[in-house]
Amino acid sequence: MIINLNLEGKKIIVVGGGNEAEKRIKSILNEKCEILVISDSINKQIKNWVKIKKIKLKKQKIENLKCITELKPDLIITTTNDRKINQKIITYAKKRKTIVYSSDNPDDSDFSNASIIDFEKTIQIAIFTGGKSPAMSKKIKSKSEKALKKVILKEDIDQIKIQKISRKLAKEIIPTQFERKQCLNNIMNDKHIDQLIKDGQVKKAEKRAIEIIKKWK
Ligand SMILES: C[C@@]1(CC(=O)O)C2=NC(=C\c3[nH]c(c(CCC(=O)O)c3CC(=O)O)Cc3[nH]c(c(CC(=O)O)c3CCC(=O)O)/C=C3\N/C(=C\2)[C@@H](CCC(=O)O)[C@]3(C)CC(=O)O)/[C@H]1CCC(=O)O
Ligand SMILES: NC(=O)c1ccc[n+]([C@@H]2O[C@H](COP(=O)([O-])OP(=O)(O)OC[C@H]3O[C@@H](n4cnc5c(N)ncnc54)[C@H](O)[C@@H]3O)[C@@H](O)[C@H]2O)c1
Image 1: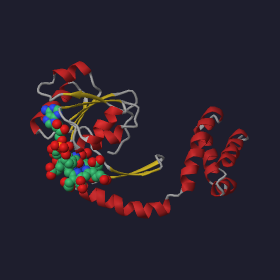
Image 2: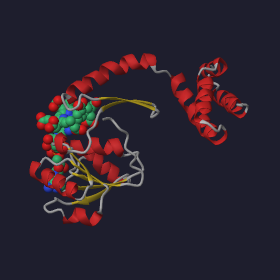
Image 3: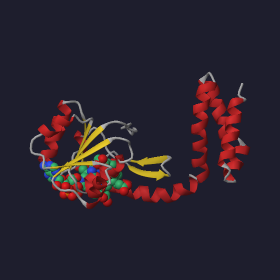
Image 4: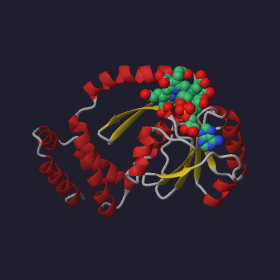
């Protein structure tokens, strides 16, 4: 099942500092969570994230798991090239009911990573083969990206921004879910708003959406 994790305020430990660690850190870097890397060596990119204080580093090789216990993480991501230590970490986390992911063991991990196509941090499309072929996910991502760019337009991104503001206001002043849905559909299909968005007048489009909600009866 593909789900979206809310990691805000969570403490995440990433064990290992190579390519895999870099990929996993990159995917959670903007999630307002606390990231601590534990590794005896780290690559250039990770070094830079430590330097600019995006993440913290504990420079050490993990031999026993005492140091992890003290840190009380919500999520552990292990990416070392040592199968034995990865397995030890999985077993340890499962015992404590801590969410765990290991780069070399999809079967025992609590989640996996899809290939993501992102549109201006507003729309994400995930491609996933259920672990059958990550390389094909990557290839299909690159093929679909070109096609999707013709379908998902700047106007759609603007409409999402207007819908976000409208939904918040609608939840405050329109009493039933049925009516809120109708009102938001009206805004989404409003020709005038469409035209304003096409003309680059997003603020005016936003104003008209707000008027529609305020006049809703
Ligand atoms: C989609 C993507 C997202 C991401 O990583 O963020 C992703 N792997 C990507 C690339 C990639 N990974 C690997 C290769 C080499 C070729 C190959 O093996 O096919 C390539 C291709 C390349 O690098 O060119 C090696 C590999 N992958 C896994 C293992 C462990 C194992 O299978 O045991 C091994 C070592 C196997 C070995 O030892 O030989 C496992 C998983 N990799 C997944 C995701 C999950 C299932 C996704 C799905 O079903 O689609 C899953 C199950 C769990 C997980 O890792 O979350 C990302 C594309 C990013 C992009 O879009 O740019
Ligand atoms: N899921 C995927 O998509 C995917 C893709 C490629 C590789 N992999 C798997 O991920 C693993 C890691 O790949 P990589 O390219 O990052 O390897 P890498 O060799 O670049 O990095 C391994 C890191 O682990 C650290 N490390 C090793 N033992 C440690 C320990 N006991 N304590 C702390 N740190 C330790 C090393 O210092 C190094 O920084 C591979 O073994 C492979 O099985 C998974």
